[in-house]
Image 1 (cartoon, rainbow, N blue to C red):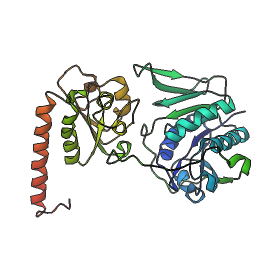
Image 2 (cartoon, rainbow, N blue to C red; image 1 turned 45 degrees about the vertical axis):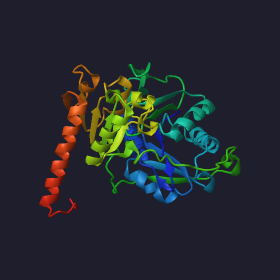
Image 3 (cartoon, one colour; image 1 turned 120 degrees about the vertical axis):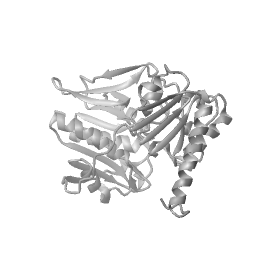
Image 4 (cartoon, rainbow, N blue to C red; image 1 turned 135 degrees about the vertical axis):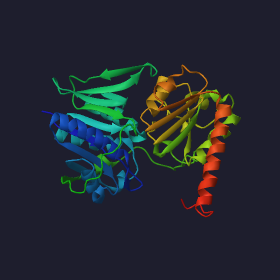
Length: 342
């Protein structure tokens, strides 16, 4: 019998990555609907001492696997160990984040244990009559939303896009069980050797972690006009995003791309300039708290999700916004005695 909801936590550079807490929010909702425990399994070099944080964020139980060989993600030892844990504990649902790790590990794991996998889900729910996991994701290039079930095989497995759900509030009063698992060398060896690592230096900060994102699209007409977006982002203390057409034109690096084939973002403020709003783009940013759209086409899809819409020429509106922001900054500086402390 399969029972329980599991999520796969992630460790990076010796610390639990925030996507682990987002997964726990998804898992907590499903576990409560199924009236089962929520378990987090996490592998790494030094995750043992951090396990209580996963309890505080919603887990009922945490399985940790600590070993120096697991400090860098390599798919073969991770897949062996997770498959062994599934065989022993038999969860009915297993979730991972659609990060590099999740997108690499989960297909290998699905093949290894002979079950299905739905990738890049934007919504998860439970069908009350069957207890089946309802796995919703964009399909056909983002033009439709498909809901998928796994009626015959277990566990039901899915990856969910980072930043598609906010973590639960930290609750230090929560208690749970932490179990350290041990695996022999036959599980830990890898055919892959890490030679080096080079970070992406084309973006000033990861857009998926930003509170404010200012994004430009094909309405900019030319890559040199991205200066408007960079200046506006700087004035708002935000980061620069882009639609796929802007990236495909070679105007800006892929690391800035927002949407189904790029990054999902959930900032406090998302400003879209010259972005029409394809279904694929909307899937990556419609969860922002406040969306401001500037587009000369009143029928643009972006206005369907915008909280504030401006129909007009972005080449007139963006400079006006910059001027107003500059005036506000100068006024605030003067009211603080010429300092920038506030």
